[in-house]
Image 1 (cartoon, one colour):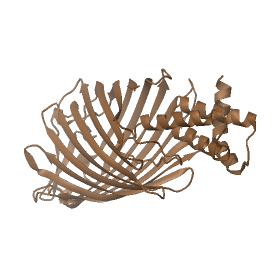
Image 2: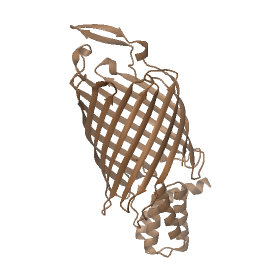
Image 3: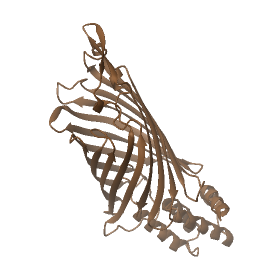
Image 4: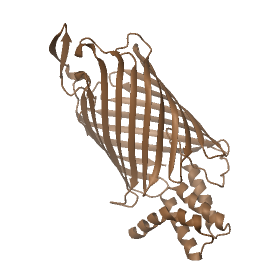
Length: 404
């Protein structure tokens, strides 16, 4: 059975190219193509199934079983909610009817794990201090030193999508996340994120989306942070395997009862997503500037540059449809004025961060309500020309997730 699934998987990668050149379909080939499409739908890969079935219907609209399978694929596409932070071009030739009601989906997660530096504290507890040309050393208080230990994470998410017309849709989301550890202060937190977005598809296949997010972060010591995000994305299809997008990001940040840290970030982004050899690849780039809203803000404004590369693939190692996602993020930030005369004689702070991580997902069920076992690992290292802002952190988490 496993061998058969693997053969069907590889066949699905080349069947599109063969259909482009095929003037007619034999009974055996039709049966195999329908089998491939049904196999893709069991994996919730509805768009790939729809693409295959469209070609079949174009060649022979009376192909037995093709219309029913295609309708099933379209229903699957409508049920499968898009993540609001991503724009995916999914435009079948046969347009689905606009949904009269909201389609709702949800996700629950429970994770337990360990971190070497849960509060992202400096790697060295003894910090060099400069004063009048002299260098001294200051030991950080215990609460500001690296806190390692075990923790528990729980989160609940709900997503809703409504097709306003054949070319317009609306998405809403709500996510609540809580982390509890054996430490305190800046290790334990509760986070609430809400989102609203709209998308419009043009006749040429391009897509325009605008999204608005609110984010509230409350730490165990009652410190509260707020953020408002406004993003826009323009996406298009490069080829049968790749989609790209460009956009603008605007973010306002505020710490309660401390306006010194208020800021507005504005920047541009560009990214591409490709599906090659059974895997999905993403390359992203963003460049922008954080503007200080208070003249007293240490460091003033800040330039930012971020590069992201990720790979997601189904491997069928321990069980059919198990997946592995790996990523690497590179970030550079530079302040626009000296941070503090007591730190490296007031130089402009530079921060360079690398994050490498991965997630393995093991399917516990294959029905409509999907259960997964998960294993996450991430290593972060931040370098700086100011010792206070250098840190090293490793986290490992194991958990379970249910999606419906």
